[in-house]
Amino acid sequence: MKKRNTLALVAGASAMALALAACSSGEETPASNGATATAAGECNVGIAMPTRSLERWINDGEGLKSRLEADGCTVDLQYADNKTDQQISQLQNMIANGSNILVIASIDGTTLGPVLEDAGNAGATVIAYDRLILGSPNVDYYATFDNYSVGTLQGKYIEEQLGLAGGDGPYNFEAFAGSPDDNNARFFFAGAWDVLSPYLDSGQLVNPSGTAPASVDDWQSIGILGWGSDDAQAEMDNRLASFYAGGEKVDVVLSPNDSLAQGISQSLQLAGYTAADFPILTGQDGDKASVANILNGVQSMTVWKDTRLLGERVELMIKSLLAGEEPEVNDTTTYNNGVKVVPSYLITPEVVTADTVQSKLIDSGFLKPEDVGL
Ligand code: GAL
Image (cartoon, rainbow, N blue to C red; front, side, top):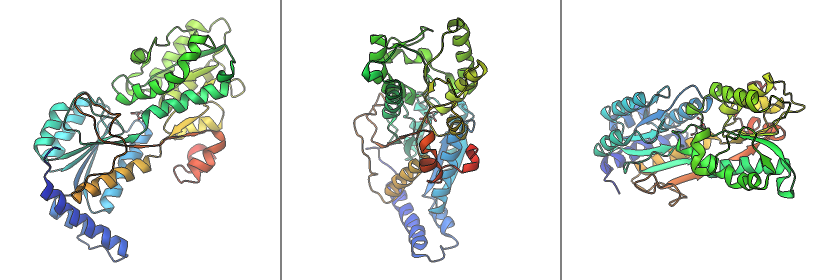
């Protein structure tokens, strides 16, 4: 285990414990509670998020920052506009400014090796947030959702809605995958493909565009760089124009997340599809725009990952680290980053459809009714 700057972390533990104890006892937290932590200089967290252009990362970053600041930590939250170089220099600054814990949702998980070596040399602990960082020994923990089961939930939703297990078909099927530089995107695709590819083999699913990858290993051939809605819309436009011009209808589209689903939905609506004949369209993240589309019948489902749970998990990991204890993990085999198997904590995602928006997203406080046109 990499030698961490344990004394500093333990000192931070007392600072955070003091802040937490004061909070929990209901006493006025010491005015210097934040300063205490800052003065100890030991609960000093750098949070590196990929972009503000996708709703969930704003929730992730702001949510985690407020959690940690309430615990008395100093937090430096940065967003990198999906630019890898920008994220690297942000991390370099965090290390230079004394962040002893780095929480990183990488843009391209293969590019952080050198800066994480600097982090390791500085004794900082690195927590990969939602996206595994590859090719570096200096990744200490991974906090995420079960990415493979995100895809499985999408594949099984399609399987159930179309009655594929009962032999129904054939259905016209189109597939999209996430950003080729995002390690998660492979897991999403693999989870879905392990459910759906037998139905392509049986002919119950047919793929008029001919873009369906021959195997999971070829997933990047249908990847949309940067998860952009516009690029997904353009790709769907192209497939409709080239392969559905003769009146054939699309029956089902596998979309790995909501930002792509929003572009695909726009393309289908502009091509004349309405809620009455809309294809099955999957998604992920519970984005406001997608939940509104689900309620309006122009997206079928989203795989909801309650990012508040992810923030809570990272907070628990940090508390353990500051107490000089090993953070709790529940997966020590799945996530091999090419150098080591990174000890991980996986949170279970769940499907949300129009019938469960209220109970799962609104009643839980994740979204407000006005966020989704209710
Ligand atoms: C993935 C993440 C998904 C989705 C996507 C687009 O890495 O796991 O939840 O947010 O990025 O940003």
